[in-house]
Image (cartoon, helix red, strand yellow):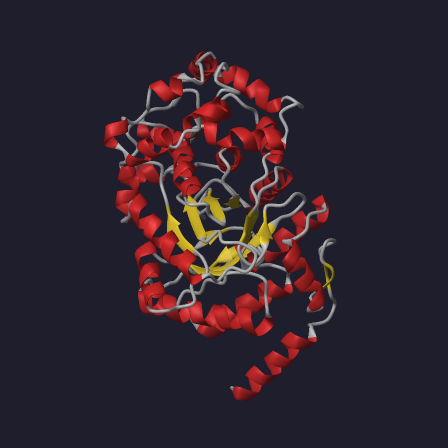
Length: 445
């Protein structure tokens, strides 16, 4: 599995990479001959040692597996690419596919294969709007601020709304991560959403136990966030287990804040997290990443995204490795039935630039990616990394003919933010509702 993986710096750091291109091809040819059944009989991390492995095995759909149980990994690739294997077929077998099967087949697929199959996978989720429908690309409006200044955050939210961003979620990474600050930010976003009757949801990306406290204190929690990994040891290093996530999901569901659905969880993942926690059990980083999607799938999330280039060049060295990882992550997640988006990003010490991100954004949008990030000027001034901007999402929507979530599109046109939301055409003038608010704000100050 590890040696068959396309080259990346994290596997080199872990000492599991193929010695050369010839060894990699031999490993890929060998892997292609492995029966899918073998992944059920030979766990990469022992069942008794890891609760993620137990989750994968215990929740495997044996009845649905009968449709593909006769295939090898190579046959599985051909089956996935076949015209007869359509969206309905893929949805029917998704619970029969384990993360290891998905990871294995991705290792023998070209980029175009990953895009073609992912485009056939449809994972639709709902809270206050609907994400994941065909010919749609949603965005997370990410108004982070290095001091959590409310005026700065509000300005970024307004900026994003005026670009049509924010239908996936208005999600803030707090600079000060505690219950009191999370509550303050939650109340502020809830007030904005209520004031303008925005069909979207908010999230403060704090630790799951902090969000549980917020719920206990009657804070307006829409989505519960947690970074997750593909091994029990990784998740333990993050300070939670599966029981914690179950408690959080139950608590969020009890609030009944969704209007069109009840998907209440938001997860983030990223290749290299298990290795950085020394919790990878000798596996390659992409296989560990795919196993995280089993954790996500268990809790019926509204959103999941891979923060693909965020951990740094120690794990994904350059633009080529970041692009490949992003396509792999999106493919594996969608194949497993996870509503996958992507933080198309890189750190400033990686051998990558914004042109690489333009390429990955275009490829992922073509592949049916659920959502991407929207940040002022592509530069997150709190987390200090480069990602996609509000206008990057507009570019992708316009060039590929993609729309926002349907409920959000209607709101954009009702508020006169866009004259043609489906065509990603902004109105020339500031909408009256926001203009009046700005006048009142400036008068108060």
